[in-house]
Length: 583
Image (spheres, rainbow, N blue to C red):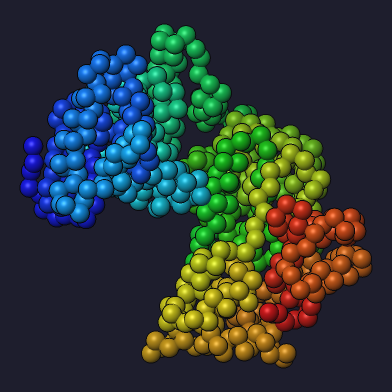
């Protein structure tokens, strides 16, 4: 049956979701015969590939098909050609080749293949921490889902494919709920999960996701009731118990309702600084951080040299995941601003206790024991910024209970065994360009913008300073051009000073300079020697072990491909000139 529709296109489009049909030009041919629809489905889902005749027969009729199936297959193929090849020049769309048939259409013209591709894009985007990309791909996939897949289509292949697609649809909807929850939208996530759980009552992951969404929405009793009902369903229908992730969620919800104990005045601290200006990129690192903080048995350490954006990423993560920490968020810069220098472990512990409204006892051990007992029943985020020595945080690394301990440091803190590390390097070039244009939209089309980003080593702090230098003034003109800024970076008398903002000449230089000055003589000499190499990467093996270990501990060497390392661009510039940015 042929229907007229608006639009058209050179290549046929195959719909297998909601209806089985072929659209060619401005004609739609619905394939209503169940076996003929099955033939089209097998060929379309292997678009561009040769499908052997025997395999096609088994897919449509099974292993014990009737003798008439061979003749019927020929009839069905001939009928499909009338919809696929409407013009004389279209005779190669459905080809009969030696031993089988080949349907020559782009994969993007088959709705099922496009649905699979888009859900794959969504999964990859969410794994990279790109919530917007995930939602965009899921929205596009939803547009293709217009009913039951392969409706009225007969044969074993159609049954298997229909079941697979229905499960894929559930997975995609579950991913949307997970992304909503992870993006700080627990109410919307709960709405998405509600119908899914009714349709899939034995899917433990969906039920746990529903419970977590209810919990983050403040509906604690409903969240607990959902987990109790799930436990009953699993025991009655499958004879099994909930898995460890579901058990941990249940314990977390219960713990959130328990008191803090005698003598405790419970507060919910909200100490996280404002979100960083112009935050861009870091999708993969944020995704890694999200995965790691869910394993609360270990602290997480974000490392990298000065200015690389450790604090900005940690603060951005805290804001994005505020609902994941119902008992509050603390923040403390461990370097301090007083002449006395970095905070001691005693000072760190006292700050944490007071943040939760608890009177701090005397002595490091007593403070550590009291805080550990308190955190054992809490889901909070403890963000300790700019750790300079493992001794400052050792008591918390050993005892932060069910709360998350997130550290940032220029150093690797190699002695901390129970720590998961996320190393940061420079931004991706496109993200670096976006950051440069944050204060300087007028230079967005300047061909030298990429060169400025590269000369800043793709380091966020340097890029922010450059963006302010390039920022627009009244009249819409940049205060400094890209060419002018590059000239200043090359000028022997200006160098690093080109990125001075508000007379703060140490904004980019100071952190790297401070770490480099603390190096031993052999490590300092090796850093200079490596910085002079013509190629950015080098082999580890021939290098002296002790100086390399010192440079790596100080965050002055980055890992490249396996067995190779590199000196970060701005560190190399400092090592070569002390005060200049180098090409």
